[in-house]
Length: 226
Image: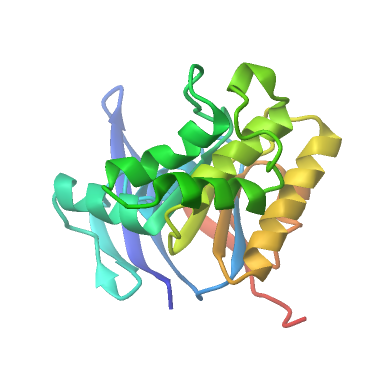
């Protein structure tokens, strides 16, 4: 089991009112699953993403990541877990504009002090189909190519989880399908993929779907086994 969420609660105070962003939710995700976390604005999916990504902590409940309870770790320890075990892909790509695709992808390895960063970054770019764009800067790439660079950066550290936040939100429909196909290929290679989305069509591309509303899980569609 790669993710175990048990009775998770997260609240915020807004204008004197207490908002239960996550209201006692529980679920599990097996290693190698491809899962969509969907729901409308305000459903709690972003809060859940932040907790799964070790960017935030719950008020109560437990989050077990690859066998380790990360629910109450310090900020520094959470950062270590986040850097080692989770690869992030964002809607806005979050690339450094004056760095080449290769330099963007090797950054996480350099921060971790890893050897052979340049070679591993090049391999990650080849994996996402950008062998001929390694020296290009983001402004020389299309939106789809920039998202592929972001995906290469997310997988270059070989994380346990690939966590994507609205990864097709800034792309046209054709390019969005190509990016979803790429996530499918990465999942077929054994990677655990979580896609956070408000788009039901994107969610339907995942065998497993968790649909949230008002901080609760309304639907939890299990894989069909095909």
